[in-house]
Every structure is written in C-alpha cells, then in structure tokens.
Image (cartoon, rainbow, N blue to C red; front, side, top):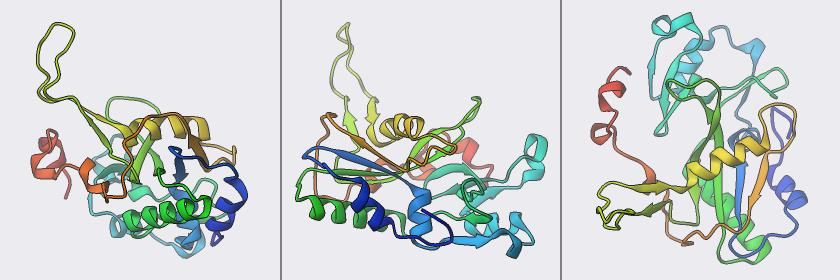
Length: 228
C-alpha cells in the first residue's frame, strides 16, 4: 500500500484466500487512509501542529506536555497523540486518519463477507497508541463490525460467590492489542491479520457505538476535562 493512494480492496483480494465462518479480520487504519488518499506531502505542511489541531476534536497543546513531544488529542472516542497523524511508512507524507471510520469499517466488512460468502465475520480497524503511566505503544480498535463488542459479566458471581456489578470485557481492543503486536510497527508489511477460533457473538447489527462511553459519564472525566 503506497502513499498517497492505493487500492485496499485489491490487497484484500490478494491476501485473504481462505476466510471462514467465525473469522475476525484486523485491518490497520493506515492502509484504509491510503486507500482514501488521506495523505499530504510533508513539504506542503508548514505548521504540523496546526494540522493536528484541525484534525483533532479536542487537544492539549504540546507546551503543556513534558518534553513537548506531542500534541495530545481526543478523536473518535480515542485518546491518541497527534490526532493519529503518522509519518512512519508514509514515503514523505503525513497520513491522516481515515474518514467516516465506522461507515468505512462496515464497508470493508460487507465486502469481505460478500466476497467469501460467509455470514459470521468480524472486522476490526486498528491503530496504535500510548496509555498513561506506561512506556511503549499498543494496539487499539478504532471501530469494529460484525460482532458484539462486550462480554457482560454483570450479575455473574466470582470464585467466592460475590456478584459482579461492573465487569464487562472489551473484545475489540483486546484483539487489537494482540493483533497489532503481531502485525508490527516497523517494516513488517503486515497490515492484515486473521483471528480464527475466538468465539465471538456475531451479528449484522451496528454495534460500534456500544463500546463507547460519553465523556461526561466516563470514569476518567476529571482527566478528560484538561482537553480543550
């Protein structure tokens, strides 16, 4: 997938040869962005921070960040640096996040599902980000389609009979973290990964929003209030 524009569907046709019922396909957001031509030559950008702030929904200026390493941003219910704008594997471009993330993820799901004539299929659009108080990057799901994103354990009992009241497992982000680790962050040229054998609850319902918490209801709201 070469910036500034390439054909993701041709890559899916070439790479996915044996899609089966119950598979979950992980696709990096960068290749979708290249497919959408969301690439700007570095030489055309005079103020990267202005571009970041334009792409972000909310941000914290780099002047408030230790070492001024990045502009911290919130975008599409995700805490990420630089609004997801990336220069790695970009061939002299800034690659922005894809547009219409949920709709585009569903389009990919519909395409793979029809192409391989399967009913039960999941798709996860991935990226990598950092989390507070930890070094290193790990994968995160930007959107998903085709399966229920939460395993609800509320009402079940723990080992000692105590009822669980809060616990729900986040499936897309858990699979994205493992998937991005296996796909790599450097020159691996592996933007797709197939998960086979995970017993997801598959559905044709639009479930992307089920994973997201409104900022005003989030446990971390006191921290989110720092964004402007």
